Length: 179
Image 1: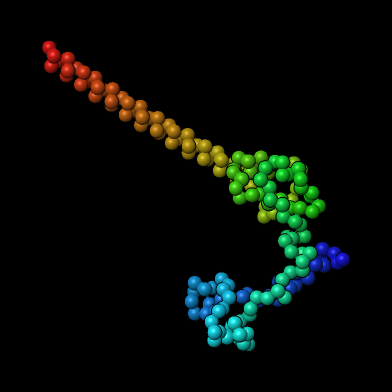
Image 2: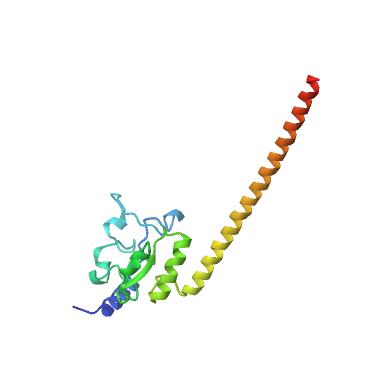
């Protein structure tokens, strides 16, 4: 069996040659660009494979089976949702991908644990920079929520104060009318 490195270099060469498959009439309609739809028209030159009418995706453009799903450096992406998932990772085979559904607090915990274990993270150049950004963001959100709570409390106290004053005035009027 060939080594992973040779498969990756082979895949990169094949991807460099692979054309950008564009939908029929992508040069005419702006909204068609960047999307592929199989042409189904009877007279379609693209469907019939005429020269000069664009390429058609086929199985021949695919990556080698052993290199499919690997990152450019040859690691297998491993999606992490919690701290227990980090225990299952092998640093020589896997690269960590933090799940999108993980919140900021848990993301900070995971990043600290990843830094401690010296694991690879996909799409993150510097863990320290990301940690500082996330902690600043979290602190900013806390400050905003505290400001909103304080504002709401002051509004409520002002409202309660007005209601108390109005009720006192009404009681005084009732007392005066009875006398």
